[in-house]
Amino acid sequence: MPMAFVLINADLGAEEQLVKELKGIENVREVYVVYGVYDIVAKVEADVMEKVKETITWKIRRLDRVRSTLTMIVVEG
Image (cartoon, rainbow, N blue to C red):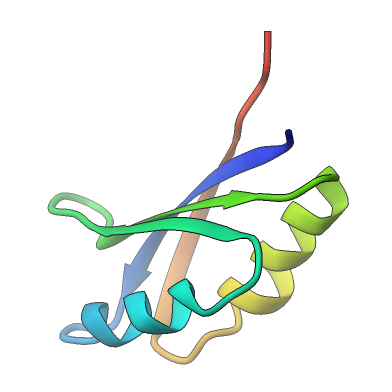
């Protein structure tokens, strides 16, 4: 099944609110607040890669208080 991990930089103090919003988005399967260069990691999974890409581009990246993202598409071997 097509899957990607999205690393998210959030506005300072917005992490918990963004986690709630992300959990409500279709195709977002897991969400974690993390320490380090990024603030949040989200796992996105769908039946086709196009839906994964649409979720990231049109839903996650457009949330208020998301500063930047880095997407890692999982390659299945």
